[in-house]
Image 1 (cartoon, rainbow, N blue to C red):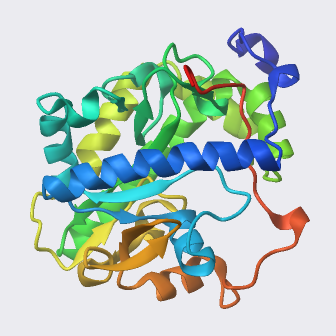
Image 2: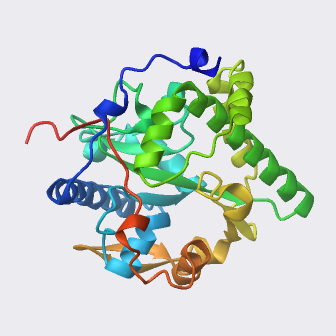
Length: 302
């Protein structure tokens, strides 16, 4: 029954691409060029940012990329995110080489994270198997304002998490077989029971664009940029477990990242301990390392 609900896919597990050491170094080199361009644009235009997630871990533990990692995550406060979108099309210093992909511009993908992608390249992963354009990308995670009022904060948080769950259920039900295989090969588990698949099918009656719109409205509902707390609701631990003191996440310090100096939150060490445990500086064994896979990869014209 569930198999009949699946969308016919252009790609299957036979298309999955693993990067060897040389391939990974080439991909990281391309990402480094991208963040150099992007961070220069941010600095020149007063756009606040910091590294996020595993990219913070790479900066603190390795002074650059985690050796087996192939992505870059960036936190950007809501006000700077909105400013970036307004500037992007009017300033071709960045848009001549890159394009912005957001939930609003590409709702058919069902992704609640925005990305800056390089034109003329292809880096197709499990979540954008159906995208016409999917260049090499860096991820943007919006740091949202959170209500000081505990009742409003409670409803903002739990509404966000419900909408995130509903959206993920709809998106991942549509290509469950491919998603499950890629998660398995990446050393991760796609935690989807038959019940969750049925929930995804049920919620799929509502167009995915509406779920994205509702989620964005909820996450951005607090307009006060001076509240005590902020949250990264599209982060791995979602709204409630990604809520922080503003002074910890929106004040930055410079650290080395490969050949660059980049921003990380002043609270980075505490953040890493919370996410990865007290031994976050210890390099994990090979079988515990996450790797992200590709369905298609091209660097365009060399």
